[in-house]
Length: 496
Image (tube, rainbow, N blue to C red; front, side, top):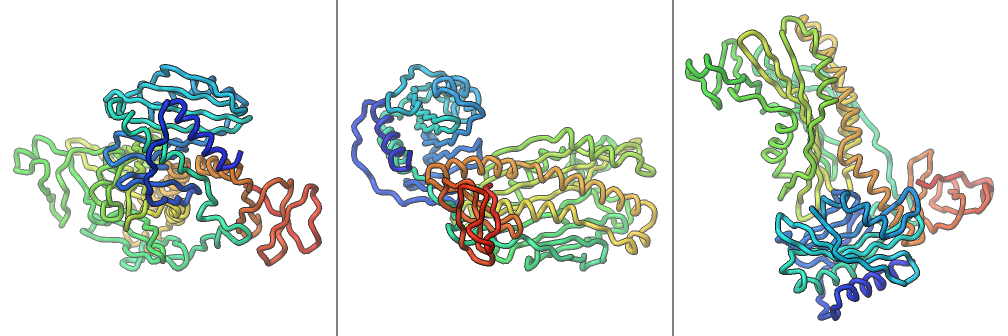
């Protein structure tokens, strides 16, 4: 089934299910997405590819939508059976949904059209879903709106859905190198006190270092930006101070929540009740990253209890401290920059230090990025490497005394753990889902993606062969049915 026939089938089925004439066709600008699809986008509508391996297009008031979701099934499943089982999984799009009627279609493929009632922002709403399955692959198409507006908006929703096409992703190049060079890293040294080094991608710029506010209040922080300005990495923030938890003694001596308290030695604490990492991450994203991410919207915010427990265990035994506990969390968000979609991620871990009669808290872990949608993978890789590569300067540590030496050990161990956590974070999980969407897109277009395992270069080529080969030092790719290269100048490629 090619893209054109799929769109034709889709339109005829939805119009038949709605018992609606096609109506007047309006002309809208075409949105071409880096993930490999395009559609006509009415003014004010927004495309969201951040959730559940689906493409959702919503109007400005978010009272109606169009949805497309590729399906890759573990075992062949009938369309009706799959849709019945999947209603719970679709609660992010169709809260409290129930199928009010459904009908199979005789078009050859296993096809089911269903009318669904659900709630949209708490209001009664209506949707028409089309599920098409062929073997272990399928597609789910849908249109939905508030119940009182569904009939009036249906022609426009069908038109937007009809315009949907899979295309070659912007990052792929048929017959040419599409992956680009892998990131190469170079060391970057703290320019302020030579306290630490990290590795950043070659050609990128970094600012920051170790900021000293008092003898014991030192805060490591840096920002790293890609040459094209599409990626900004964040590791710490010197403007985030140490905090002291409000108590009766502070209040009696004139230090209520929100004030600054100084015990001396140029040390200053912001009086504020303790904030766990997940809440701090969401607050920081909204308050500090809006300039790089207009219309910022949090799409996933979650606590990390296992990671919190592991990080807390690394602080046990710190000299002279009664109790130290880390609570970690993460948030992923979307927005726009210069009219183009951007994605962001933030990991935060707050450290609560409790003793007899006092409680302090710090933010030793604050790592994230803001990147254009197509550069999210590169941003995540660079951030993880940056954190993993951090090394304290032994000479600087030796000059600071025993407490700092213990802190240096903890920094090394905790940053390695945080790096592994970020490797498994939201946008990396999304890239796994993006690959599923890419595989379905390729199937629709009659193509496949291949990679040179030696160089990392990628190509998109016509599918249908069992093996693929590259002519050495060129962009010539050939396919064969048996594991025999066209000649000795060809080296093997791998499908991915």
